Image 1 (cartoon, rainbow over the protein chains, first blue to last red):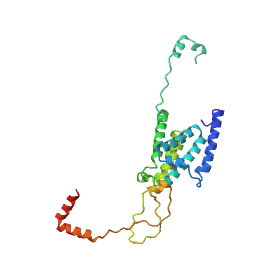
Image 2 (image 1 turned 120 degrees about the horizontal axis):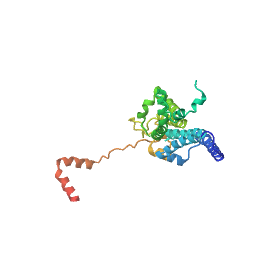
Image 3 (image 1 turned 90 degrees about the vertical axis):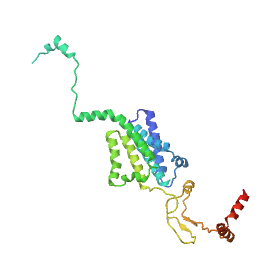
Image 4 (image 1 turned 30 degrees about the vertical axis):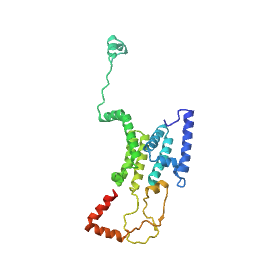
Length: 85
Length: 188
């Protein structure tokens, strides 16, 4: 699954990678930008945290780049929430 | 040395029809390879489920239950487990294990929260503005997103009301109990 299986798959991967790059640059790694209030409120839900971790695994199974970027985004979010809440 | 013509005889054709049973490899390496092949899929699923549950509830786990990881050996485990998952399962599971390890590491850096002020007894009666040195916030402060840096008064000084009549009636209650009983019965 390292390489795209078709045009649609490649385009989807590119969109997700660019979105995650933007999220990591402007939200996850930026200390000045607070997380959306809905994400802060959802932090209390175990299902939300379970889903985030599951997305990391699924993303990594789909595409290594997506998995790495998702892992970084989820990790930054969870560590921020642990330190703040 | 047999001639090629001999292989075409009916006897040799009958021998070739017998299914050839390969000799089973009984070596330890073959046993490990076979076990790994058979158990890889259920092992991956079980590991992923275990990692998901661990990562989900690491935040609410009491710090005391994770303190065995707060040393050099425990820090090594944070590296070893993702490595083992990557080598024996697949690298997405190793990535998940690395994320969960970092979550647990972040949880270890945070002390257990306790609401309120520190348990210090201040006998002074003056009420001055005090800086809040305790990083733990009250629940309502966390909910409202408040981060107070100082508090103008952290106590309410009260004193008991001194009433002579009450004192007198109390003192008489010890001596003249029938009068109190009669008054209470009249209220009923």
